[in-house]
Length: 583
Image 1 (cartoon, rainbow, N blue to C red):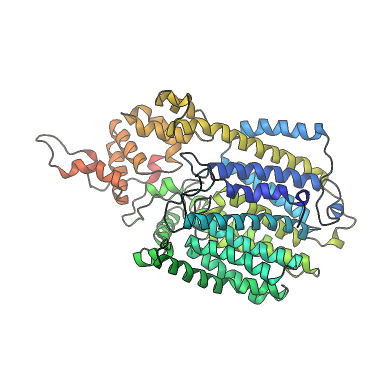
Image 2 (image 1 turned 90 degrees about the vertical axis):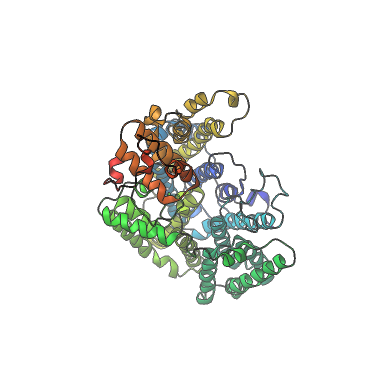
């Protein structure tokens, strides 16, 4: 049993801890998970910069990475700069750009560390991922058996009975965490030669948690893991058996929870879904079809980064799925529709070239080196599958660990040990940059947490600040360059005359359009005399068949008063406009 001072605390804090956070306040259910991830990964990046500030050949001695002492001034100056950057940049750049910079820094730092000792880095990552998975499985089991037993600040209450969602509150995300944990189990099991009983015991817990999510994507991931165990003969036989047994274990646990439901226990969500006859794709086929239509109309430059929801909502799709999608549920389609086909092709080719170039790490003569590369590739493959069906990389607690894994894979497949001998060491140049980005991440997360409090006061007022008038609370929230769109949404959807606050529509319209926002926007356009646009928005709302829309269109069911025209929302005459007319 490792002592506490030898546990990979920076990795546990950055990778596992964000998945444990259950605290949640409106309007965002996973806001605290996200900022915890950014802050934790910032601290981990600082750690990677510190342990790599000397020759990498000394980064591994007894299997534990050691952090050299850092002078106070050396740490304080980048931290101060990070505070300034973290509070100024959110007003100048989108959060997505700041996250991309953070992910790039993590990838480069991990690759630099993994060039000589990928197994040490992979062991720390795997330990944190396994901790996240085992804890997530236990949380999921409690959510299935007794969802109200634990307080909601400790264990998130699932929205659907008979389904585990973890503290990330999303079953597919929990399924991915558990699948990644099975990869981590394989790595740790082969490195430490764990006995088969220990491996199968942990595997049983993880597979049970995955079954309780009712995730079909999770079952696909189990097939991938079983295939890995079947074909990779470099793995010790206990590890191969553990991986190949994931599918039989899933069958066993599915039968067990099905029987439990029929014996008076909680009805398994998977069984309820099968009997419901619902769409097997959960509307993915429909949204993909709509996305392809948008790509055909905007093939070269796309609709603009982050603009999919705006363009899709304000484009006529009579057969559209009725949920309000802010993502295409496919990474490649998302890039193509927002950036255009040429940019997407360039990004895909670049990524493919990087992966292909680093392939020699998979066949490295040192077994541990090769398996670290293989394990990183397996984990990346699982995230890729998830990204082709949903959008996990839009969440920091998936994006940043994935960047770390990509760095391990690229570093393990880079120049070999002997090829680095005699080459100049450039880590001394990179380390200050890593520390600067790390400080920015921590300061940015702190700034986001501070900015979120006025937003919470709008949707869930509490304390003395919650006693202020709604208009004042909205005005305070609108000052935030990072989260002010939430306040703008409240302003336009609560205004008696939405046209009086028309300028406030811009930010929420380009974040996520929903039925309430569409009703307010259509009314505002009509009040401003832009009847054609108001009619067009109302016609798009009608396609969603939403209850709020039914209320909005209720006057159309009654005959108009003598001598008066019907309300604008009753006009069904096609209007020749596109989403670009609303930019």
